[in-house]
Length: 525
Image (cartoon, rainbow, N blue to C red; front, top):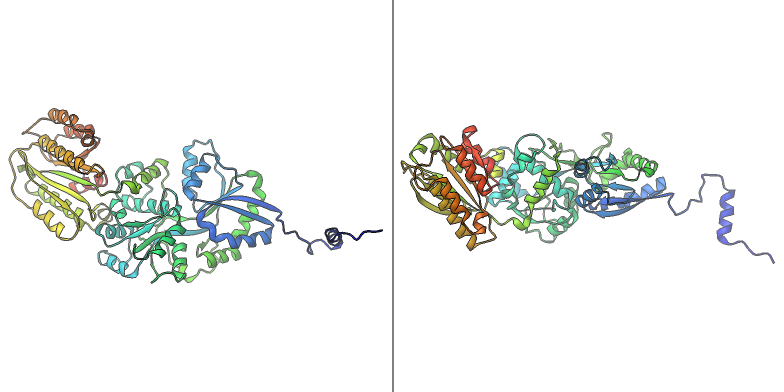
């Protein structure tokens, strides 16, 4: 007896009889690519279903943090076909540092989104009252955080690209050089005032948004991708939409590159890139994710027509990024305590004492320059002012908490009582004994000493005696660094020797100004 053909076999016969190209495609893709992807790209998943339908190429996304992916790829620790990152500049730095042992993968930008600041409208109004320009800057954001006017959320830069790009952007603005950050620009941490206002963090952009939405009273602003913040505004989950701020002192742009890791997949890679960058796909990307299209012919969503302004350079040295990430450590963010030992000998009368008072006026918030806003004292910061001549004549502690503190600092510095002699090393010894007391009382609080003098030591102990006493201090006190600021006729050799012996350094204000000398070391103290 003849058996009836199976349905599967019958289907094959039918397909064989059809003209090629008229159907009978399998549900299975022609090609499957394993792609290591930044977690921010989860919103591209629906569009990739269309890619599979149009090209026969299926994309399997393995989501991880961009910084983690970059580190892994730079070591050659992955066997995916492609990588799709929010940004690949950190990866390129790591590959360059590897000395050519790893080839740079072929890369194609797919879309862009700048890292910006979303601020509650009322908070933005308050920030503008203190700003010289209605177009707010990173410096204005830092100034508001230092003053206690702004609480913000930002993803952890050690794991999320949005956080890393924001950190680079803010640090570049704080350096004020107009170029890419250099190692010497990050020897001191100028971002402490800014990060004193951080109240929310997360390991990813999505986690940051979830935390902010869950408790909208914890922060007044979010730092993140323009696309993420615009999507949040459109979601209806906020009490009021955030105002999107494009900092006028510069923005870092993410380009979402697709990278070819396995050269044998080049043909499929080219096909995917061509599909993602064609005009109709670029339009869909913009409509669904609010990222900016690369194709200039695509008509922009009205929300994306804002010019992003100046583009900031990404550092070209991996040690710069390493230092920024080390400085960021939230676990070490306890407000520090600084002891200022200030020379009030007779040679400081006149122009020099005016320069000292002007410097502190800037530190308490009176310096409206971009760098001045980054290096000002911040809310919760503690410090001690000492005036010395033949010996320490006055000492007072301050905590930055409200505007009255500024008046108290001015009063302390306004005295016209000067002494004939200068006991430089006795004053520094006194400061270290005070530092030892502070470390005993609060071992976890960082303490730093700043010694400013314009004269030669002609009273009290000599430098060698100070160094001997310093070496006899308890380990916690010896760990306190001293930064010496030279003005006038002060001995540069001795000041440099003392600073280096304690782990600090000397700054010569004669080469610039007292104000700039303090700015250069601010963040180290």
